[in-house]
Image (cartoon, rainbow over all chains, first blue to last red; front, side, top):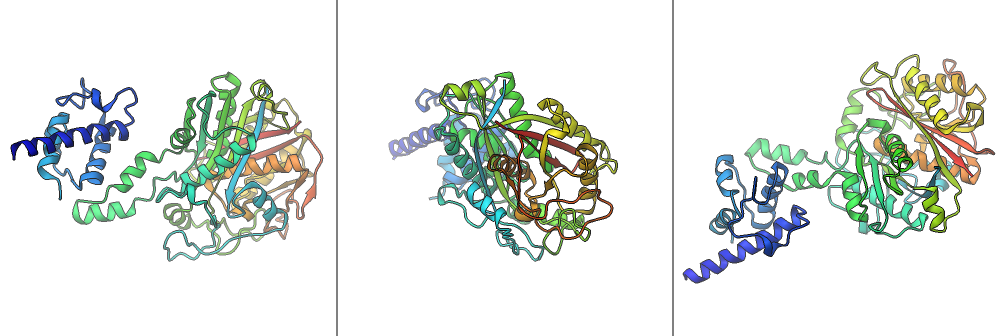
Length: 93
Length: 387
């Protein structure tokens, strides 16, 4: 059971990396180059506030998720891993 | 360095391509009707594009669709490929609506429930038309969207001219596009300048403008680059001028000094005198103020015998698209040697010192001018030359 949950989480991480590279036009990066604990903003991937809006849009479009609380948003958007865990825990079947 | 107009593309209520547009002008076809591209209780006549090719239909992004359709035609006309990554190509496009005013549902939903479908946000982010067109055609040079109200298209063409002259690109896609949209329709209606009947530019009984939609695109190239790839220049973009009124948000300067300055600047940029211009494609919206001021200025600069007309009787006022569409018409008219009757004109206004052409007229000559006057008081003019 734990294994399948981990695989599913791993699958979401990979999907998120693909979606970020594609939707944010991250041209010099391949999805497989992004570390699981890569920090999204600041010194990690270096995303900006417009990219944050794009992520909110892609979460709704691909997973049916809405991030309403911006304080919560800061924690969710910290890294690939925190984003993946949020999606994994809340995804609408 | 001369700058060649190597390709022209245009889509409007008058037609889906340049040839259909010119046919409508030649036969006096005014394809207006009530608003149908969105629901509206307003009954002003408008000029809608009747048919968009399936491949360019993008939901909620009609301005971009129009721009892409016209760009495809222009690139084809220029004999350039659909992807421009091997050239240093720039994109400079004017618009007012862009594809970024289709968000009323978002606001309604968000106000009611604090939540909304984010598709309009997505469209907003992807709706910068120069960026979107550059992405589609893989143009890797400069890209700028010009938002200067009704002179956007002409200004975009002028900016592209300066890029090419300075050599920061060899090719440029330049012009403008705008879709018919609820926001400007309601806004212009509130200003009291929409006519309840077909517009009548420069006519004594003119009662306002009709809104329209469309796109007009020129492909511009440095002459050395164009000749090297086997082209034989026929048309040139020979000058551009721009000047602001610094007067009022929506009314032109009564003395027309801003437009006069822009015109003289464009003529100087081309190295020609007013006598060498064989016709003017005027802004001519059909409002009391615009036509009075513009008519007086044209008379002052070119004399009372200048042949001039407005094509807004065939297309409506396409806002950001106007400068592009009218540049396309001016170039085509110069090349083919005829100008269309100024649709909607019947009676001379004694307060305007000249009258537009009232029937299709053959012209001989090498230079023509297209003018645009904008809310906010921007005035722009371009000069086109026939080889």
